[in-house]
Picture 1 (cartoon, one colour):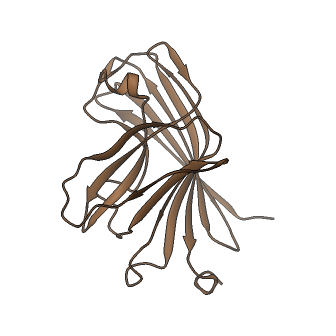
Picture 2: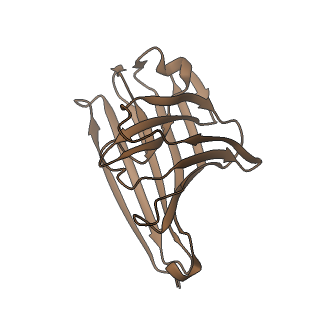
Picture 3: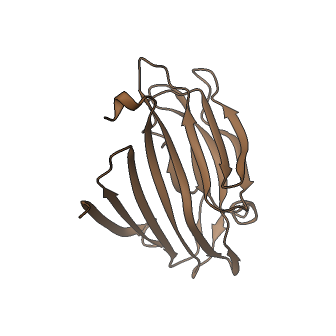
Length: 193
């Protein structure tokens, strides 16, 4: 049968205001690497924030292989493309609060310098549900943040809906859960055989 490993991490964030749980599942593959990441957040107290990312493809301090393009869309096709800014650009949002109403929302980071990497990265949001400040959301929102860890890059964040994010507050009793498939796809077949 297939080989599968699973790990679950849980804990409290922001002085006990938020309970967070992440389950990572990885299985043997004969083509490219993929992980299934399931997450769940429960807001136990009213929580204020300046910036909040629920899941990120590329992190502020772990996004050090430069690529040139980022595309996003859903199962119906590509919705947009962003070009990574020039080296040295300050860290800030390039684009925020892109509502993605379709199914299987995806993001792809590609166009790496060949001397740095032989693969592209991506994520597919397989499931998403949020109950935030008394409202229900079943489709994700994306934001794109410029990072500067070894090089200027662009991360894709699963963010709060704009109407919640702009308040800077998530009320106690709010919950968010989802499942993301994280992909590392080699550019050439010879790289994974």
